[in-house]
Length: 432
Image 1: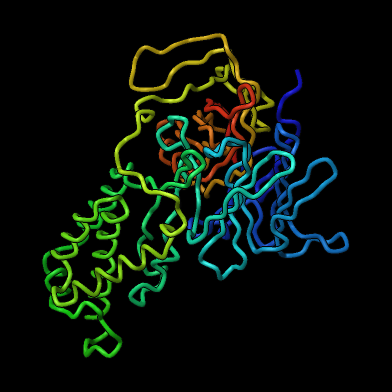
Image 2 (image 1 turned 90 degrees about the vertical axis):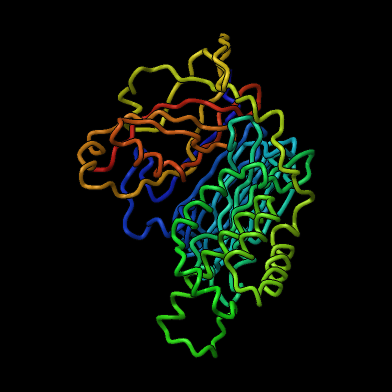
C-alpha cells in the first residue's frame, strides 16, 4: 500500500544524511528556521496532494538572499510569501483543531524585525488561509500534555516591546501565551498552564532581595530620563523594575489578576500604582489578547487526564542505514501513555513514519564531542504536532539532547490519515 505521505525532501544548513554541528552563526540567540536570508529549503507533499515549498527566491536561476513560501497542487500555485528574510515551517500535516490538516508558517520580513507573522493554511485542495496571528516573536505548536490537543505557544512580545521605554532585548522574557483552537475558535488557554508561570515567578522572586525592592519602592516608578539618579543607581532600579513587571505579567497572563495586583502593590511605588496598573491592562488588551475569540476559565479540561496513544518503532539498535539517515520503522504495538498503569495493546501500526522538517544541534561541550562523533542513539517521543515531547539518550547526554531537540520539527506520523504521537529511535552523529 502506498504511503499517504507521497514525497518528502529535507534540506537545511545540516547535511541530508546526518546531523552536523552548527557554526557560531546558529547560536541560541538565533531562531533556527527552514530558510533564513535565502539559505535552506524544505519541500514536502501532504497526504492530500498539496506541496509545501519553502526556499530561496530564484532570479534567472540564481538564488537571491531572501526566502519565499508556496503551496502547489494540480499544476496550480499559491504564493504565500513572495519574499522575506526568514520563513519557517512550524507545523506540516497536523490538525491544530481546525478540523483539517494544515501547514503553519512563521514569517519574518527583515532581519531587524523582532516579531513574526504566523500564517495557517489548510492542506486541502485548493488550500486557503485559515488564520493569521501576529504580535509574537516565536510561535511553537505542540501537544503540551500529550492529550491530543495542540496548543500554540508564543509570547506577547509586541505588547511589551517599548513598554515603559524598555526594549524587548532588555527583558528576561516576554509574557508567555498559550492558544488553542476549540470548535475552530482561537482561545487563550494560558490559565490552564499556571505551573509554567509559577516556575518563572519563583525564579524571579529569588533574584529580588529586600534592599532592591526597598530602593525601587522609594523611587517614582517611572524612572524618567530627567531623573537626578546617577547611571549606576538607575541601572539597578531599572533591573528591579523589569523583574517586578515580569512577576506581575506572569500572574496576569496566567489568569490570576488579583494575585497580579497584589504583587504590584507589594513591590511598586504606591504613588505610581494606579498609573502602571492602567498601563499594563491597556497594553495587554491591545496585544495578542485582541486577536483571540475567547479566554479559558482556567479549569482543566477532561481530556487533560488522559494521554494520547504512542506508536512504537521496533529495532533494538539502529541499522547501518539509520546511521546515515534519519529513519525508523513502527512496530505493530500501540499502548496508552498516561497516569493509568492499565496500558492497552493492539496489533495496529501507524501508516507512515515521522519525517524531518528541521534539525539543528548546538556545538557539544568538549566532554561530549567524542561520543557524538561515534554516534549516539536517541529515543524520542514525537507528538501529533510533530514536536519532540521527550528525548532520552545515554545518561550523560540527556540534558544536552533535551535542550537540542527542543527545536526539532517533524511531519508527524499518520494513522488512518490522522496525525498521531509516535516513538522514534535514531542515531545522531556529528560530521567528522
